[in-house]
Each structure stands twice: as C-alpha cells, then as structure tokens.
Amino acid sequence: MVEHVAAGTTAEERRVLDYWTQERMARALPIGLLDLVTGRDGLLGRLVGRTRPLAAPGVSRVSPVSGTNAALPRDLAAPRHQAAARPDASTVGSRWATGGAVARTTGRVFLTVGGADFVCSASTVRSANKDLVVTAGHCVKDGTGGWAANWTFVPGYGTDGPHPYGRYPARRMFVAGPWSSSADDDYDIGMVALGTSRGRHVADVVGTQEIAFNAPRGGQAFGFGYPADPPYDGGDLVYCAGRLANDPYGETRDQGLGCDMTAGSSGGPWMTGFDGVTGKGTITSLSSFKYSGDRRTMYGPYLGDAAKALYDAAGRA
Image (cartoon, one colour):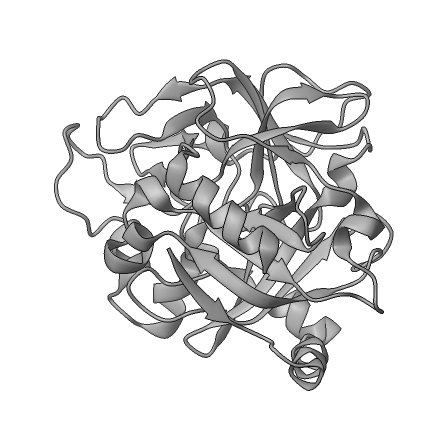
C-alpha cells in the first residue's frame, strides 16, 4: 500500500477549491485522454493500446474508453441517454433517472495530471471517518508516475446544479502497492480520504454505500459513472446492468460487465444486491478498463485483501 498527503491544511484545501472554477470544471477532459493531451508515452499510453500482444488477436487494453468513439460502428456510437421509470436489469448504458441514494453518493472527480485537468467518477463508502470515497487507481496516481493534484470530489453532480452537495478536496490518497510499482490492472483501485465541505463530512451530507471484499464472483451488478466522451457529455449519471463474467482473455482477474460507458466513467462504482428503489447496494468493483476489440464490455478489479487494506487505512485517515 502507498499513500500520499494531498491537501493537508485548510489553506491548501481552499487553494484547491478556488482552482476549480466553473470554467475549469467544464473544460476538464476524461482521464483516458492523458497521453494525447500531454504527449507522453507513459502509463495511459500503455492502456490505450501500446501493450504487449494479448491472447486474442487484435485485442489490446484501453482505459474506459480512451480517445474518441468516432471510429466505432454506428450501432456502438448511437446515444443511449434514455431514462426509464424503473431501472433495467440489463442495459449497456442508460441515464439514471430513478433517484435514490446512488444519485447522491456517486459523483464526479476533478483532478490535474501532467499540467492538464481531467475527470473521473467515484462513490462514497461507509467508513469510520465519514470522509471516504473509492475510485480507480488511475484516477489517483498515474501508475508508476506521479500523484494527481487538485483532486476534488463532487457528489450528485448535475442533479441540481454542478455541485448541489458541496465540493470535497482530497486530504490523503491510497493505492495498492502493485498499482504504484507496476500499474497492475488487477489492483487499479484507489481510496481517498476527503476534507469537509463547509465543516460537514461527505457521509453526513449524501450518505454512503456499503463495500464488500472477497465477495463471490459473478452474479448481477449495476455500474454507475459519469461518461464524458461521445456519445455522452459528462452531465448525466449513467448506469449499466447485467451479469458479471471473468476476463475471457485471461489477462487479469477482473470481471466484465456489458457497458458502453466511455471515458470519464473510470472509478465509478459497481454494486451487487442493488435496490433500484432505494438506490443502495454493495460495492464489489469499479470501472477500470476496456479491451480495444470489445468496446461493449467494461472490466473492473476484484476487491480482495489488498483493497481491504486500502479501505482500512483510508477509513482511519
């Protein structure tokens, strides 16, 4: 486990919040575009396809989803912003319009990496300090590279204005050792202890979701996030729902969920035992990456002992 002190003082928290003007938030890009923006050939360059050959011909890993959908077939690029009165048990991407806890506990993350501003997704989770969110490791630390700066969580983004429940800067960040040392996708998990918003803990303002470790594999899951690459624009909470399946290429221990969410959804929570009426469930994974040959399946890491260690440490921070 590796940790980092982010905004450690009240003055630093204020500087971070002042940094995120409405204009900067509107211009922030999905984290999957990091290498295209900075011109680097680093971690996310690896994730967008410059990886070692995989077991399946023509398949490489991408962060979800890097770049643009312009080259996708028409059926994959068609907007899926429909909203149903009841959540569907199977969908590759629909706007969440049912409300409930998930509409408050899920939020957008704004962060700076390599001098450029990006967005991810995250969710609050129950913790002793009432300040904890879970997201993807690549939304916190650039693998073997540097930590994100200006990291701010905005729960319930867009439900009633851009930050209806406040803005919460990161105090301390945690990632698993294998993510920091080798960008191992099996450990693409980040935990962040937040500062308060106007003196209030995020859990007291929006509530939390449960989280489980070493849970049974497979089963039904609902995934949530704020995809920002076309056909989405980052303004809506979107969900996918379906059965989980093991990585068919054997490259990771991750599980896949049918989902056409694009970049910006990284770090969004996957829940089992999800109740569409209350909007509550148990987080057992999160949006991490896609394979370039299969844009309809999102993959998420299995939350095992390493994730539990992160949770325990961040929940006490």
